[in-house]
Picture 1 (tube, rainbow, N blue to C red):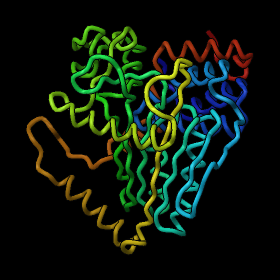
Picture 2: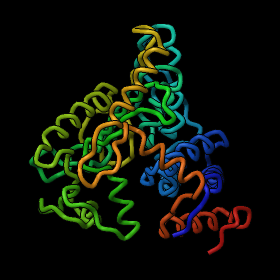
Picture 3: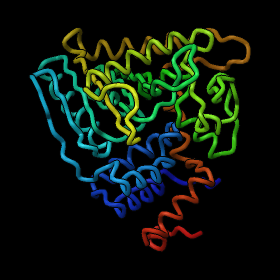
Length: 351
C-alpha cells in the first residue's frame, strides 16, 4: 500500500479529471475536496472516488461545465438545479450563496438537486463556520440505487443520508458533527472490500437478512443497517427525515430511478451567530465547552475524551506530515487511468 503526500495526490486527481473533460477549475475543486477527505481520515470519500467520477463522466452521468441554474429564490432562500454537474462544484457555490444571504438576512437556506456526489458532507458547513456562522446540511442520493434497509427490513429503501453541523469557535480544530444515519457509510464498506478487510458486525446484513462481516455482501443483494443497533429505529427515523429534507423538499422524490444515475440532493441552512449574541463571546464559550467535555474523567481503556471534530483535526495534522495510505487496488486504477489518458509520463506513474 503506497504512502503518498497530499499535494502529490491532489496533482494526480487534478490531471486525471482535467484529461477526462473537467475544466481546470472543476478539477481543482474536486481534487481539493477529495484529498481533504483523505487528510481527515475519510478515505472512503478521497482519492478512491476519482476513478468512479471519471467513469460517470464517460457515461454522461456527470456533465463537466454544466449550467448552474437558480430556479427560484428569495432574500433568504435559494432553489438550485445543478444540471448534473460535479457535486463539489455545485454544492460549494450553493453554500457560498447561502452564506452571503445569511450575512444580510441572518438566516438563509437552500435546496440543491440534480448534482453528482458531494463527497464529505462536513466540507460545506465548515465553510460557514469559518465565516462566524452556524451551518447544517443534510444530503441524500435522490432516486439513485439505495443501500440502507429501514429498521426491521432487509431490503434497501434509503441512502446513507448524512447530517452535518458546524460551529464557529476559537479551537485549533473545528467543532463539528458529520455522521451517516446508517451504521456506516457505504463508502467505508467499499473501502474495506478494496483493502481486503472484514467489517464490524452490525454494519451490513446479507441478502437473506443475516448480519455479516463480509463487505462484499453489500453489493451482493445485502443492505446497510440503520444507525443504532438494537435501537436502530432512531437512525431509521433520522434517515427518513433527511430523505424528506434532501429528496422530497428538493423535488428529487424517493425510491429508485432505473437509470442508476447518482443524484445527490442537499438541504442547507446557515445561521448568523451575531444575530443571536456577540460572535466572539459565542466562539469563546464553544471553546470552553469543548475543553469542559475533554476534561471528563475517562472509563477504563480510554485515554482521552475528544470534542466533536477533534479526531479529524488530529488526523489531518498527522497525515499532512506523514502522507496518506492508498490501497493497492485504488493505486492500480489510478495508474491504469493515467496510461489510458496518456499522462503516465507527466505524472510519473508507471505500472
